[in-house]
Length: 146
Image 1 (cartoon, rainbow, N blue to C red):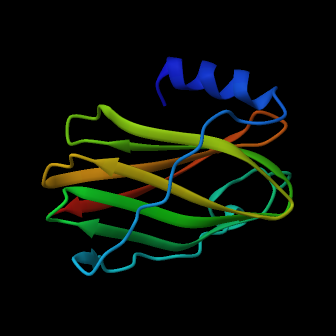
Image 2: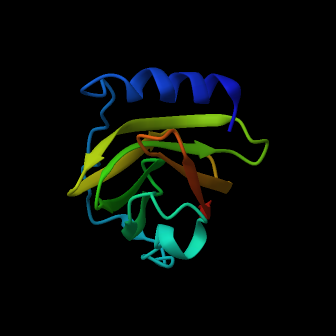
C-alpha cells in the first residue's frame, strides 16, 4: 500500500460517507464475461487478528465490451462489522488506473470499477479492508483485459 493511499484511507475512515462512486456499465450484446475467480474469502482463515470482522468477497466478475474498449469489475463485499474498503486497479507497472472506496457495516455492498479506453494486458485488482482498529487486510486478483 502506498503512503498516499494509507493517508487517503485513514481520512475517509473518519468520515461517515465516502464521496466516491462508480457508474454501472451499460452492457450490450458485444460484452464478454470473463471466467470468474474464487469468490469467497474469509478474514479468519488469512489473518491472525481474531478481532477483525469476518468478511467475504463474492461474485467477483470482469465484464468487457472489447469493441467499445470498456471493462467493468464487480463484486459483492459482505462484512459482519464496520469496514472501510479501497479497491484499486493497477497496471503491469503497478500504477493506479482507477479506484473506488467506501464503507460496509454489518451488511453487504455491491462494488463496481468501470474503466473506459482500456488497453489489452495484465492488471491487478487490489482490495484493501480496514477495520476500526486500523488493521488492514488485502486481497489481490490478477485479471487480463483483451
